[in-house]
Length: 444
Image (tube, rainbow, N blue to C red):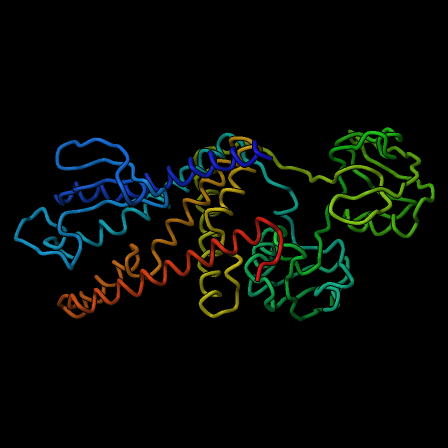
């Protein structure tokens, strides 16, 4: 437990520290290029711990590791200004726009570069995510079950996306927790329309409508002493059928075992392209996190597609992935504004630390993929039109350009104060939700 916490702390420090460094370097580099004097380049806030001074800039690490900043001369509109050409406010709005957008642009560019590099070395993903959304199992008590969805149905439309893959369906579910999600399905040439409400049984599980993809049952880790091990089943075997009944998902197999209980079963498996039949007797055994079930004693896994992409292919796929994630993030923001999504869908530093710890233990590739995702999120979040943030600076510059004059200082001061209060409240709510999800209990 302690080791896992330490890994998470180190991993999140590396990710967030690097993201902040890249972001602030974007502002710094463009400011220097345009002749704006940079007084401080800081990681963290508050009291200076250590650093060095080179030329006109103090490069420093501060005591509170919750971000960073580049302090430019004359940047604060409330400060007293001179005619010094090195002051930020003495530069054109076009220059100020370029400096403001440089930080988020660096984060977005980093996400693209990281994923491109990962895909060139090791492009790995569950094969079913690329497949058409054909349903393999439906929980009868779920929203999908109540909507009349049946195994074998193909989802032809989900929230406006035509002929979706399972990856697109899962993304739509992720941002539609406890909200109606319209769908169109096809069954034997007939069209079925309706809506589902994705929900999750625990804070650690992503929201689901209760439908499960049609994917082969693949044997992963096998528990010693359990029926699967005694029958000679091996990791990588694919279960084709049980007692002559084809399997369309792991959940369909689990339900079948609860009906047949400890009845001896004939299991047909495929190994190295050849089919073989084994006899298995399920046993009633503990299941992690739930009550006892009849089980065979193995962990399900998926067929993993692994390849290496050329530079052009990797770049194209990276751009496509980042476009999909960007659209997902913006759609989530829109749902939050419309109060159609919960802030629980947003992860703060604690949530990111948990994900970073898991990714770090899985290896470099998952860690770099998470780093790219965090970088993209940081870039887009900073472009939101919230004063104090880069997007807010850009918005005010746009308004001033339309007005052909600067907004008065008292009004700007009130805007910045309100924005600061909003960000503090937002951060507090997100961190509170992080804590609730982390401890897995409901707090008042």
